[in-house]
Every structure is written in C-alpha cells, then in structure tokens.
Image: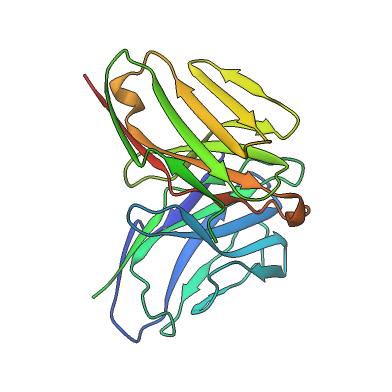
Length: 112
Length: 114
C-alpha cells in the first residue's frame, strides 16, 4: 500500500522546546515538501528537497530545519526560534517526472 | 507568498446543485492544479490544466483556464454532500524550473447540504 505518512497526528509542545515531525513515503518519489497551514488559509512552503542530501528554503523557513538523509524520509524540526509554531503541517512528495504533489494526512502542532 | 485569490471564500449549496469556484493568479504559469481538502486532512489532487489548455474534464469536475485574464474556474456538477470540503488552486510558474514548487490560493470552503 503505497503512500505518504506523517506522525504524530497531534503534537503538543512547550515553549522553548524543539520538536520533530516525521514524514515518510514509499512512492519512490525524488522530491519532498513541507508546508504550513494556518486556520482558513492556504499552504505556505517551508522547505523542499529535490534529491537526497539536498534541500532548499521555501517562503517561511525561519525557525525550522530539515534533513534528507534517505529518499523515503524528510523530517521537519520546529525549533524554539519559531515564535508562532501552532499550525497544521503537511508533507508532500512528487515524482521527478510529474507535476502532481501527493500529501500526507498532516500533523497538528499546538504550543502550550 | 500567495499567488492567487479564490472566490468565493465560502459557498453553501443544496445537494444536486452545481458549485463554481474561481481562482485568480498574478504571474505566468506552466500549469494550474486544483486540490481538495477534507476538514483536518491532507490535500488530494483533483485535476491539472496546462497553460496551453483551455478546458479539462474529469468526472463531475470541469476546469477552465483563461491565461489572458489569469484566472481559472472549477465547476462541480450535481454536487453531493460528500463534496463538502475546501478546494484550493495551486500554480506552478516557469520561474520554478524543475523544483515542482506550487503556490496555493487561500481556498474556497464548500458546504453541500443534503
């Protein structure tokens, strides 16, 4: 059963803590993306990676970090430098030949 | 940065009626895509239309693209309660190269009443 998974579904963070959101895909896609969605808003690009061991900043990268050590995995760390991290985070992947992005189910992060 | 705006922001119709959502964008595009999001879920790709296409159909979905007006519309015919969701347009611009980067609109929330 191919797809893209994110964990956890819900995450609670205390102020000052770093947290890592998991994103895994078994679609053999080269490119992966992280988006942030705020209530009633569209998606904003945080980071993206087109190939293993390479990634680029998106429009709102400040306070976030990523790694791409394996093709299947693209974890996102929300650092304490991100002042307003409460949001819905979506991971997506895309094959090199296609234009369509395939999304995971999302992680809802709440800062307590 | 938000590429486009969607109109209306919210739409409420009765089951069986047609629903039309509009998307406007600012810069030239390679393609425009429509995605659907059920509440609290990830996005699902619906349809892609390329800049040299004017209309595309998929089941009950019809998408039009007017590059001279920098706008697109999504028509859902004979709507069902299960169509209740948010719908987003997303554009890929020539400047993105092969990155696959998309810029999303703010979405239209559709409610279909049974």
